Length: 95
Image (cartoon, rainbow, N blue to C red):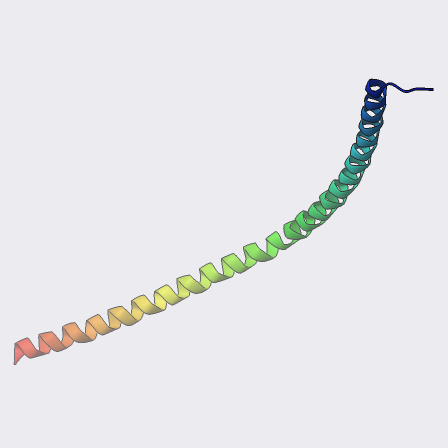
């Protein structure tokens, strides 16, 4: 009926290892389920972003056109001012 201390420690070690393995398996299963959920969410977000790419391209093209028009307007205003300044200088030289 007497139990050796060495056998007791071996028994305790084996029991703790079994408990540790069971806990690790449960944690890994929960981690896999969580990663699957995150993967589904990421796929959903990626799908929605890809649907918006057309809208972003349209907005980009629109801003490019607006920028082109504003550059033309600024260029024409600057050339008009230069024309007025040059005309006035030519008029001052004639007098």
